[in-house]
Picture 1: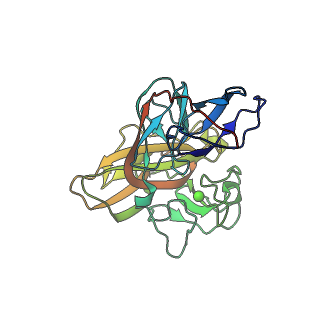
Picture 2: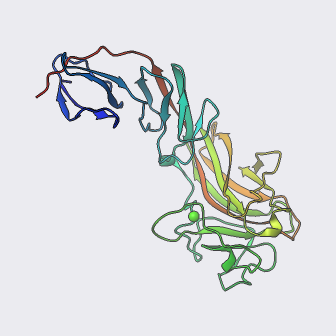
Amino acid sequence: MRAAYLKCHSYLNIVCVAVLFFGAPTFMPHAYYHVIGFNASTRLAYYKYAAVYTPAHCGETLPQNTCTFPATLTADPDAPYWLWNTGETTQSISVSSPGIYSWQTANMHDDVVVDGSFTGFNAANPAFISDYVYKIPAGSGTLYPEGAYTVGTNPNAVHDQFTSLADHTNNTTDDRNMMIVNGADVKNKIIWSEKNLVVKPNTTYIFSVWCTSVSSASINNPAQLLFSINNVLQNQTPISPTTTLGQWINFTTTWQSKSNTKVTISIVNQNITGGGNDFALDDIIFAPLCTTYINLTNTVPPTPTITPR
Ligand SMILES: [Ca+2]
């Protein structure tokens, strides 16, 4: 590359514009270059690789280089979640040494759940089945008694003891729906299930759901949820939504499809106490697990000679 646009640190008292390089080294892709010094008499510019910043896509192996540490590694912002091999769960992480890093997420291109965000919910033809009784939203008494659900945008609008809170999807268009549930007093009733979803054999899938409690009574008595795949309960210990109302918590479990080409997935509740046990579900995903690797090296580039225009 013979020309490059250099980003400048604002504290440098130089004019940084498009600079023509003669004999400059090849620049690494996906990296920002920062001018860190300029000598007017020799017309030499000194630069360095800044923090590596490359949204990576599912399944890729990315060679990346930095000459300074710590470096920042950044995963695809559109992924539903990030789990780094360092144990961190933020989109970007800071690392202090070369090595192979990886982040794991669900490959949403192959998500098999139909309308897991409830955005397109159609009461006349829902994409899922439930043992709970569906109630048409009809004011603050809608979700009486226990064992009922509806789909809507505000729990408080369908139960006077539920709180006002927003869904997890946070989409800017269409309905911001969630599944709002008044927990039943019978164990293992299916809250939500989709049947005979087509899956790839010999593939690791992730089953993910976001959940929150929706009533103050649920702070001391939250739901106790279990994942079921092909009628086999996955987690031995029930998982409970947050005790902070409106704070969405993600639960996941992984499953190896082996020779299976179809799968039935369900969410059931173990809590049979009526007071509390009120919750909402959103953004249910069943998708192949995907790991993206970043091979981070540490090479100091040679200093270029520049000639101003
Ligand atoms: Ca939603």
